Structure formats: structure tokens, C-alpha cells
Image (cartoon, rainbow, N blue to C red; front, side, top):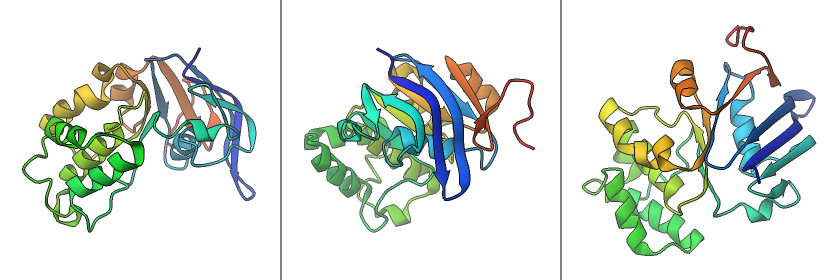
Length: 215
């Protein structure tokens, strides 16, 4: 059973087409790299795969859940790291993770473990609003992997990270994690090096290798 199967996927915002004719098959443990310029539909695709947006056409199956009819099966199985960190800025990093842990029935001890894995033990009791962008990204990664999901949806996961921090997080969100991943990145060379499957989008539609993505 494939982890992700897309066949003619479509999504619109009113009259504007955000995705059209998107096809992909990603086996369990593989990485799908999604490439394209601004407005290509990359983030929309991630949100559809997470069950946050309804597809308007075609078919989408994620972890054996047919979307949107069976999207109730996905919570707990997907780790979503969006362009925005999805953290409560007035809460501390630890409080954010404790809240997320309660939502997923994750033991409190797991919070301490993940904070250590992202190197945030010493600053975890500071409000998110007082943390640097790199530290916020570390907490966001911790939130995405806290419940040990088999699928990671990653939108520019290494944004705001210095090389040392990116290396630290590799076991959690990199190929070393062993998880199925959908990776959105403007770093074409880096994404291709990680990818088993590549999807190139331009204005919401798949394009071939010979077409310029960023014009």
C-alpha cells in the first residue's frame, strides 16, 4: 500500500485554480520533493494532504484514508510543519508541546525527550515570543514529531536554521528519520538530493524537467 496516491488532484479558491491534474505515488518511507516558485500550489498541496483543505476534483489517498471522506483517520498519523510555526506565542515552548501532547494522548515524558532532541532544554520555559526565529523553528519541529507520526509534511523545514541546528534535526525530519516525507523547498539541489519522487509545479499544474519553474 502506497503512503500517498494522487490522481488528477484539483483544488480551487473561488474561480482561481490552485492545483490541477496533480498525480503522484509515494511509497512508505519515501520522500516526495515538491518544487516550484511562489504561487505554484506547494503549500496548498501540503494542506490538502494534511486534511486541512478539501480537494475539489480527482482523488487523494493518504495513509489509506480517502480524502476528504476519511480525513478523520489522519490526526495522529501526520506531522505538519508549515511555513508558519503554528505555536501559541504567549505560551512557552514546553507549554506548547504539553498542549499538543494532550491532544494526541502523548505521555508528558515524551515532551522532555523531544525538547532534548531539538536542543531546547535550556530555553523551553521562555515564551515563544521571546525566542529567536531559529529557536521557534526548533520548537515547531518538536511539535511536528512529538506524536511520532509516520508521515511528515514539511514546508521549508530548515528555514531560519544554522548548519549546526539543521544537522541536529536531521534524525527527526531528514531521511534518517525513516518516515514518509513530503518536502517543499526552494533549495532545488538539496531537495533533489533527498527525493525519491519529484513533483514540479507551476501555477498549480505539473510540469516537466525542461520547463522553467520560477518565471
